[in-house]
Every structure is written in C-alpha cells, then in structure tokens.
Image 1 (tube, rainbow, N blue to C red):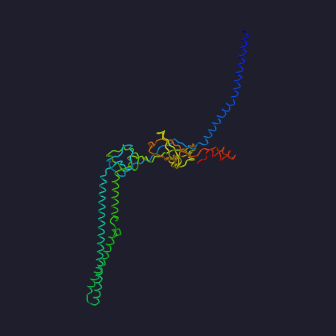
Image 2 (tube, rainbow, N blue to C red; image 1 turned 90 degrees about the vertical axis):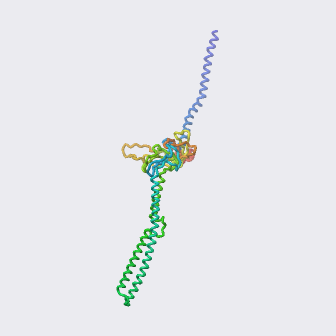
Length: 391
C-alpha cells in the first residue's frame, strides 16, 4: 500500500512539470505574432491618419451663416387715408397684388383740374394761331397802304414842280406816307410777337406748344398720383408688419408702413474666418444645412466674397493703434447662391445654417516631406498621388 501511494506522488510532479514546459513553448511561439500585431496597429493608424490629413482640408465649413432675403420697405408715394387693406400678416402674395389703397377723391379732383387746364391751353394755342393770321393780314394791309401813300406823295411832288398844286398838298402827302410807314412797322412787330407766342413756328402742332406740354405734364403727374393711391407689391414675397395698418389711418410719404420679404432672392450669408479664404473662389460648390431642417441638404455655389471684413464696414471701425493690441481672426462675409426647387423647405430670413464649401484643394504633404521627396526625385509623383495642390 505504501509503495503504490509513493508512485502516485512521484508521477503527479512529473506531469505538472511537463505541462509547464508545454505552456512555455506555446507562449514563446505566440510572442512574435503578438509583437508584430502590437507594432503594426500604431503604424497602420499613423498611415491612415497621415492619408486623411494629406488628402483632407478641401472642405471649409462654418456655422456662422444665416438665411438672407431682400427686404422692401413699402413707403406710400402719396399721402392720404387708408380705405382698404389687401393681404394679412405673413401672407404670401404675387407681384402686382394690392397691398393697400388710399382715398383717391382728392387725386381724382386734381386729375379733372389738370384735364381742364390742358383743354384751356389748347384753346389758347388756337387763339394764338388766329392772332398770328390776323397780324399777318394787318401787315399786308399796312404794306398796301404804304405803297399807295408813296405813289400819292410822288405824284404830289411832281405836280408841285409843275405848279399845279400847292405846298400844302405835298405836306399832306408826306404826312400820309410817314403814317403808313409807321403802320407797317407796328404790323411787323405784331406779326413777330404772334410768331414768338407760337414758339417761333406758326405751323406748330397744338400739343407741341410749350404751354400745352406743361399742362400735359401736370396732367400726367396728377394721373400718376392717382395711380399711386393703389399701392401694389413690387415683387413676389411675404408681407409682414401689416397688423399696424387700419382703415381710416392716415399715412404720409415719409413713413414706412409695412415690409415685403422677397422670397425669390433667398441666399445664405456665411461669415468665414479670413484664414479659410485662401483657396475659396466664386463658383465653387456648396452644401447647406438649415438648422430648422437638419435632414435636408441644399446645394448651391459661392456667388461672391465680401470686399472686406465685417468690422471694416461697421459704424465705428476698430482702431488698433494702442499698445495692448491683440490679434483677432477676422471674418469675411461670403454670399452663397442656393439651388432651390419646389421640394425645398420654406426658408425664413435669419434662419441659422451650416455651410460646407468644397475648395478643391487638399492640404498636401508637409513642406519638409516634399523637400525630401524632391531630393529623391519623387516629389511630383508623391504630390500627384496625394491629390495635393488641386485648385
């Protein structure tokens, strides 16, 4: 009995030693693969990160962007009392639709008076033409009387030389001649005055006469004011601030009474950092996401880049002449045109948006890497492979 138990005790340590040796051999066999895996993961991550860095950077984004639409301040061009109002608050209207109407009684009366003035001016011109013809006829009569007076004076002078008449008869003939000459001079002045009253042209058309043209201009102005009592929308859009209008309210030409937001002029005003404009150009593609519609992406393009930073056009531009000046990255407004269709969601002025501009220019390789590759003759190949320097 004791001998068998001794054998069992000696066998168990031997089996345990064999198992430990086997585990040690297995661990030694797995260690190179584990080391290779542990070393390759950081390298792979570095390669992927480097590729993403080199080929990235072509998309420039900003959340400092807002929906912009042109606003038209509706100011009546004539004064008066409002008698009718067309649309309600935030109603969508078409171009030419009635916004409100001003009492036109005064302006109708002004048109009637202007029409009467035109008719009176035309009658005056016709009278001037008659006066001109009368003056011409009187001049003709005066000239014939002058011819007769000259003939008589010449005859009396001849008879006086023959002793057939007295000196008194000749003196009377001379007086008659001078009177006839004066009548001709006056008649000629009357003709010239009548011609001047007709603008220097006796054959002038009645409506081309200055007095008639002035009367017609006043009539046109009166009719225009009458037309302006009916205020219409200058463009398609949405009307706002109409709640301040009431029938019976008096409006003047110096006050803005409501606002029309032109929905057809919808753009995005995006404010990019000045450091993001290096490769941005007009015409580059853009994707816009409106905060109110996060699941909808609207395409567009860069329409224009502002002429200066926002602070440069502020009412009081910043002065950086002090000694404690701190450099701050400025923002430049960029106007984004949108490709809108019937499926686009309704956009409201002032809505926040996120703008992504594809500049088509990747970061590329760092300069020291490019210089090293260029020394090896691989610079152009590496740059082309990474897509760097794309404009």
